[in-house]
Image (cartoon, rainbow, N blue to C red; front, side):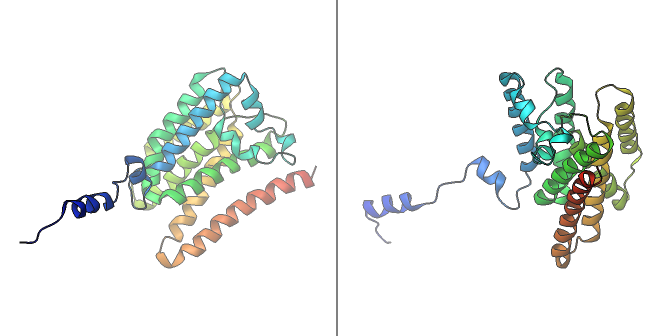
Length: 236
């Protein structure tokens, strides 16, 4: 039987790696925790609190107003972080939708692809507003949320699942955008179409040897949206 000196035992205990925290484990590759969905939700809620505390300053800085596109193009994306500070229903509906649909879609396509759908759908919603309502200031993540709905619809159809309930949800929410004052149906339609397009690209390039092609096609979707933005001002 070997004998271990107290100093050696103490040194061995000290050298043992620390156990990663719950947060670190969540962000590890292969983790099933939908960290992108929850991160977006958390950041959006923080920004909403800042909106209330700043008395409109944060809203004015991040909202999308088409005439400012060339000077401040980032607003086309930051619009998804700000919501109406006059109605809690706006942010509650969008964040509840993200909380329910986000983790499910993120588990199906993965973190990076989910983030791509969310960002490109936001941009798609802004481009639609730019073309169809060029003098309207908008706030909210509705374009991104409809992008998730569009992506989930395409994936569900490909997997052979029943999509009737999802079609009803999309139709009702699109319809509300046309009849409820102050709701940007343009962002809804733009986000829905871009989200569906992203999912179609991912389904057609889901093999391991097609990942570079997939990335290029998603970049192409973003490029088309950028060109559509530029074209809108060129034609003015």
